[in-house]
Image 1 (spheres, rainbow, N blue to C red):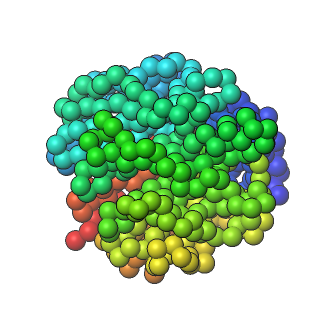
Image 2: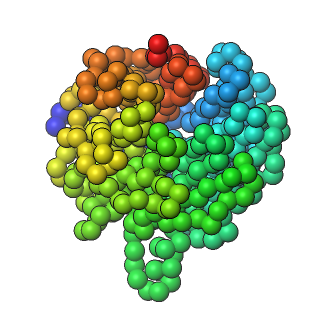
Length: 420
């Protein structure tokens, strides 16, 4: 290990509990599982600059959604508030923010805990976020609704009534206008502890709404054993079925990734994506990414520090997750790689991630036009020497955009591809 990496690791060990700066790519988890509030940034070895306001300029993470009419909705958390704004020129200018919720320091913030926002073709908007109910990091997911394209919103309401802990919502708008939502649920963990049985982790729960989020079906548990601090990735397959990817807990305390298809009959089999062999009781706070092509190919990307492989990897499945290709390592060997994200349109797949070289953070892209069989050379899309959010990918029609928020340059929505 170089002197730079060694000194950098020591610095992170000191700061990890304070702001959750999860290991720089090549380093393992460096804080205990009890610190479930950790939610910061991997790629900049310092705390985001202090910012007291609730505007976008003080946000650490922003979530975009492109509506059918071309309007960009952007949701973020800062200053203890959840805010939404919209843009009619693809992010160059924004309307005055609408504050939809305020929870102060109890608001669950950070890249993996970002608010989730979707909208249908009629301008009905659904947003979900989480806040901490107590000092033990037990959280509640709230929902807010808008019927006028995001100009006004309903008062926040709890998504479920279980009352244990729900965190890290992931939301999809299906072709028929129904909403799918998945999250990390702690009801089974709480029940086990009440029975005197110590149990780590959480569970993967999900539900559907057929009325724009006003009501949801009784929630179901897809997997009883999952990591409790990593976001759930979700995408729709050609049948309109949600496909999830998440960090599961396999026997022996191994925290490797799994995928599941959610059909009308419930959750399908739990499919292990790769045998990374990451045995840990720590909280990585580093969720995976997924994209499903029009051919039904599941494309997956994730971070691991397993005994069998360590770093950021990509793999795909052509048989609904029954088996996956050999994982492909992403990024330069001498750089800290993190935060992969995927988007699939037709047979075209875009894959982005972050790399930190000790001074600058760059967003790197690879693209495939044949459903992941072959890939383009790596290309650098953007760069910053300051704090930055995770890179996200969104699309509208046949156009693909990179969504990236940095403290130095603000919010950027950049067109990176198009299907002819």
